[in-house]
Length: 89
Image (cartoon, rainbow, N blue to C red; front, side, top):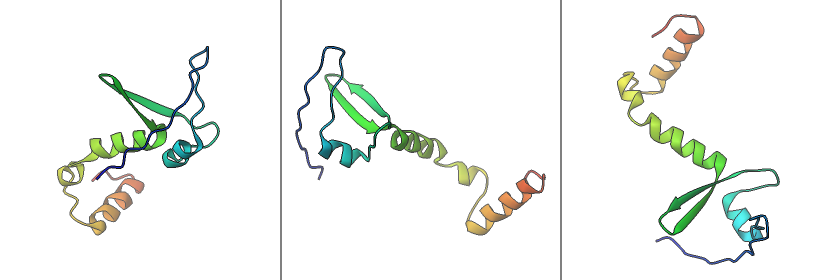
């Protein structure tokens, strides 16, 4: 079950907010990192942009191993070796 926690942040004149430390920690954010904001009706989901990009990539790769007929790690290694030698699988 997902735990719901509440934190507040004040919106400043330029629309800026300071994320509470506990939220930054949960999202794995450091100074200079970016966040992605996903809007769904009247809710906003905030994610670490790097994590969000990786999830999108992983979702886009679902089923690709089967299409390439990769059944195990040895198949992946063989494909990489062929690519490195300039031979396409």
